[in-house]
Length: 100
Image (cartoon, rainbow, N blue to C red; front, side):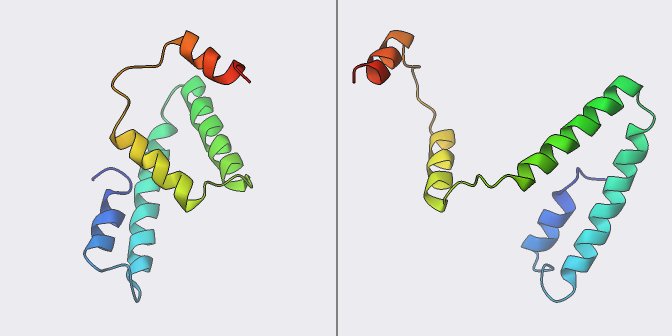
């Protein structure tokens, strides 16, 4: 089975996201998620604890009131698409922030 999200993305792109298509997508995602969770239950307890912690962090993030504006999100995407070729030296960073 493809990675989680692949099927939903493909169905959405194919136009299945409207008029009942979302029910199909959610059903498929639930099945994928159940398969993944069944595998996780076979892992060592320490790794299971890691998964539980990641899910808790995701829940905390979802409950956060902090959100990027559309403009901020666009800036993040722009910077990720064109990373700075040379890092700024620490001395330059300190000079920029401490010169006021």
